[in-house]
Amino acid sequence: MANDCTPYVPKLLRCHACLFLFDAPPSSFLLFLFSFLAAFLSVNILYIYTGILMMKTLDQLAQQHGLWRASQRPLMAELPDKKATGYSAFDQCLGGLPSPGVTDIISDYGVGELRLVLPALYHASGQQVVWIRPPVGLNAAMLHQQGYSTDNTLLVSPKSDQDALWAAEQAARSGACQAVVLWPSSLTVGQVKRLKLAAEHGQCAVVLLRRQQTYSLTLPVDLSVALAPSACGVTVTVRYCRGQWPPAPFTLDWRTQWPALVTWPSNAENLLAFPSRQQREQA
Image (cartoon, rainbow, N blue to C red; front, side, top):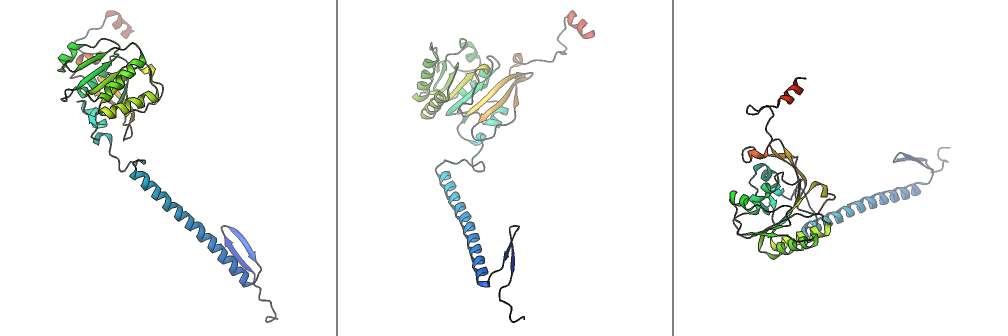
């Protein structure tokens, strides 16, 4: 009886948690096995080929400067296009103000925004520093007191926002200005892009000083920081920084340089509280 048995032998194949029962001649099973192996190999070859094409595409993008790799791009503090502010905490974290480039400073008026940027705006090049539409008159005596000459200072007071933006763009593009400081009431992405192109063309540093309530959207600037007064100076919050992740907020200690601009503890020995305040504290 054993010799009379048909050559058909049931085969059981487990593939990807599925059971297939083959009750077919060996030639049919081999054909299925070869087909399965061919499909498996073709899929893997397709994956490998796709991966090679993607790597070539990434390499081409990197060569054309269309791909940013964090492992290869230095931090902004290591980039050459910067102007030191003279404040060690700011320069160590950010390397200074981008130049050429556009810096966006968001703060209330009078918290120390000008004292932060003045050392970077006036340097040894002797080119013009253009101030456009400041909210109050520029104090020439303050500039002289800090050692900055007004001979290379130009004050422009346009009547409209469009004229102010036009003047800032022309000054930045001229190549005769080392810095342009603008107080805009509102800005669009397109306007900032034009200022950025003008700054790169004229190798100029453009600084935008905006109030907190005018901050509504992210602009394509090189550096964006927010300033807030603190007990010992100014707290800097980096919103955007080209070339690196924004660092944690840090404080510029101005107690030595600008003692009149900081808040001293209320329990200082040279201060006397009003009697009404003493009564409230004792109560």
